[in-house]
Length: 290
View 1 (cartoon, helix red, strand yellow):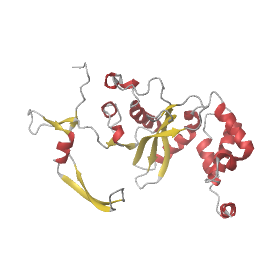
View 2: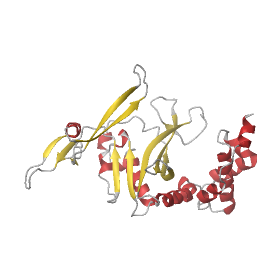
View 3: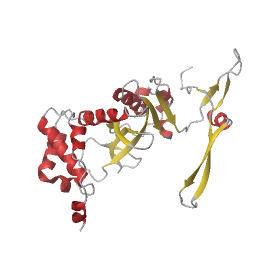
C-alpha cells in the first residue's frame, strides 16, 4: 500500500539534480550522470534505504564514485555550492547557520578511519561541520561550506593544556574555517548574517578578519571582559563583565514565545526582552602570555 501511495504522488522535478550536480568535479561525465541519477532516485523515494531506492546498478556506481581516491566532499559539492551562491544573490541579506553534527558508527567495528565522538569507549565515528544558507523568510538555499574530520584516539581526552595550544591546532578552528568557507563561496557584495550557538563563543573566531558586510550572531556562553566606549571624548573606557553590562542595556524590543513542555515543567509562555549595547570584547589572558 505504501508503494502504491508513493507511485501516485507527483515525482520531484528531475532537473534539480542536473542543476546541482552537473558542475561536480568527478573527472568523468559518466560519474556525474550516475550521481545525478542516484540523487533523483533518493528524492523520489525519501523513506527508502539507499539500496532499495537506487537498486544494484546505481549502488555499484555509488561505490565506484565514493571509493575513487580523487573523490572528495568539496569536489562532490562544488556544483551544489555554486547553485547555492546563485540562489543567495536573489536576497540582499542571507542567514547562514553553522553547526557540528556527530555521525556515529558505533556498531561498525571494522570500519577504519574513525575516532571517538563521546567520552565512552564505544562511541566512535566522525564529525561534520556545515554552513547552511536560508533566506530571511526561512526558504532553504543550500550548503556553502562543509568539513569532515575524525578525532585522533591517542589525543582524545587530553585537555589539560588546551588553553596553551595554538588556535590552529584546536578543534574550535572549525568556526573560523566555516566563516572563511562562506566568504569564499559568496561574492564580496553579498551581505551575510552568520549564526552560531553557544559552542561558537570563541574569541579567535570573533576576532578573525571578515568582510564589512559579514556579520556574526552568537549565543554567548563565556563571562567575558568587555569594554564600553568612553562617554566623553578623551575619557577612560569602562570595563565590566559581558552579562552584567548586557543586562543593564536599554530595552529596544519585546516578544512572546511559547516554550514547550519539558521534564518537570509545563508548557508556558515566556516574554523575551531585547537589549542593545555597543561594546568591545576583550581577549582572554592565556597562561604564560602577558
